[in-house]
Image (cartoon, rainbow, N blue to C red):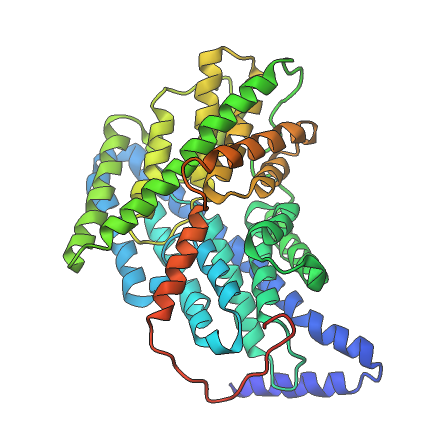
Length: 463
């Protein structure tokens, strides 16, 4: 604390020496975003490396002692859930609904509720629980958790600002943090910006466009500096497409949009059913049974039931083995359901992308399409399924575009996203994240209010 106070005094002295008031105000408003973005880039890279190590170690164990998964997977599922229930209940699941709820609650009166959604405790427990899950073979991703971690970092930096610092909108700070987190997780800066505009906030972008852009750029550059310039999926070959491919794209978009929304609806129904459980023992048994089911399918049917599913995307896109068994999409859809509903931490972005990719690969095999046409359907399946879950067609299209650098098929991606978004309304009018956001807000409203010791002046955009 003494060091922090000394740093704050030194900063105040340095800025007091700047005579240009406009320059001083601009620097004071920009520095928190820059510092938080740098920390977000570092945290996302560190988390990504840990996640990959956990997944690789789990894969190594499966290849050498697959029967161990009958014990490992249920045990990891139960332990990952226990970490969340014991230390940070609002660190469960993806993390994106929590960030959306935090943005909605970002005002002085709801300050303590936001702290339950975004905090240092959330960062630690989110990381630990998701790593335990993926080590046990859980079908989860790291992208949603990265967004909540990034939002927590930006929130913490905002709280560290001394009283003399110009007020910065908490809502804008959290939104910029989430965008930076997505950009760093996927190396998709445009996707991060579109995600912030389309999903996270209804505030007009002109209010914080500079902060948003710089946050995404700094976090992305930090991640690239540590991991190198890379594409999440690489450069799949897409040329010489059939003139009838648009019909196939529409077919895939309809199927993936319906299945993405259907998977979300099923998970919500399970959450509702679990709310009727009267004891902790029932929740523990449920988590263990989910882990055991996943282990059984992986051991007796196919190991592609396990983990985030990135291997399915890369294998189908970059090898001659493009067509998958008919049951693969069923595994990739049921996997997130069994993993996510345990109550542990883990994202659905990567599993949704892999589920969409498997659907595109299976359909292209049934239609006996060429290699390029198959690659396109795999990518459009990813766009469609993710749209069915999130209801963000533009974000989904831009993410897949930036993951592959295939600008020549952006129209195909947009069509897939728009059609998937339209048909998903048949299953549910609202997105998976919208439903969970409402649930988190309701849970927070039931908790006792804790009054702040000091009054807080709202920043522009907080009210």
